[in-house]
Amino acid sequence: MTLNVTQPSQELDNVLSPSMGGDLISGAQLYFILLSIVALTQVISLGGVITNLINIAVFVKLGFNETSNISLLTLALCDLLSTILTIWGTLCITPGFSDAELPFLPTEIAQLTGAGLSMFVLRCTAWVTAFISFERCLCILIPLKVKKWVTPKTTTAVVVTISIATIGPYIGVYWRWIFVWKFLPGRNATVLGVTVVNTPVLILKDKVSNIVLGLIQPTVAFVTVLVCTVFLVVYLRRSSQWRKSMASAGGEKAGGDNSSRFEPKQNISRKEEKVVRLVTSIAAIFIVCYTPNTVMHLNMAIFPSFSLFGQHRNTFLMIYLVSVFANSVSASVNIFIYYNMGTRYRNALRLMFHLDSEDPVK
Image (cartoon, rainbow, N blue to C red; front, side):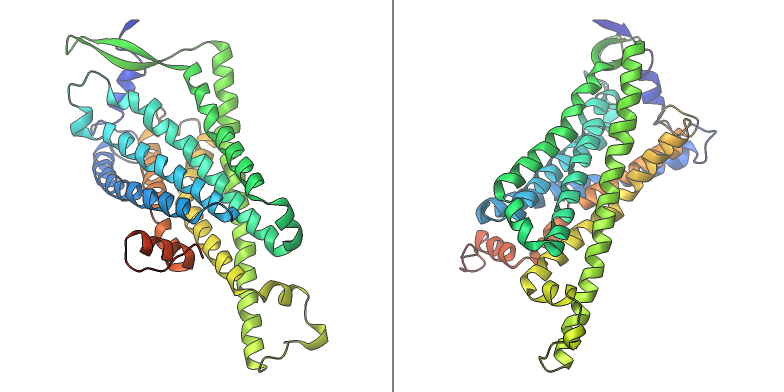
């Protein structure tokens, strides 16, 4: 099927033009922001591809006897896919690349093969992070029962379900957005692009999916991570205070017979505390980096003009670019947390690069 260039092709091309006005952010400002953020995002994402490949190799080497390794491996796989899609998506909107006479329209193709899919992968990351945080909270509250409930098999089942439930619905995007061949009069050439199929049923499905998948689903995951992180931070503070009181008492139990049952039960294992600190650090970075994405989707739900084709499209694009940059940072820095806080991870990594001979599996 061949179409003349109509919507949304012209809008997608013009939305990146530096001459646009009538917004809180001028076209010239947006153009400068685009060039700056895209360059930084591509560099960080390239580093993220390398660090996540290392993370995957290390977790595979450590094995899957511990449920945390399964969850963190899934997180690394999501981050790897996210960084690859980010590199491709930002490349498609880079002026030098998008203006080239390619056999496809980069800014359109990126909607289905880059930016759109990366948002669904990001939701998978959000829910995996929520699961990791929630599991650690349960380990603190009901440690004996959690060991029976959360096994390698159940953890695998949970992360697979999360992946299917968050990334799987992306197939529904192709209900309305389809690949077509378009004729460009200016180039006298036919290239691959994207068009929108507007039928009442598909429009309704799109609106429902935007509310459920674009707003409710990621917001619930974000709130879950936030609440669990606050709980873990409180736990870490109480744990630290309890250890200090134990040290000052010369090894005697702090508080005598009136001490809270929470404290001794929570503080007998330093290994557990290290895991909590690791999970808290991962969750905290996720919260900071995911906030621009949450703000963007909330504004899209509240203000109809805040969209790619709305009156405030420049502001939308700026926040979108900031969220893409923040997400690339979040997907790239976990290796530093694992290395600094995870002894077995650090030993496995050093062994992998022949920095020492210690066996991390023992």
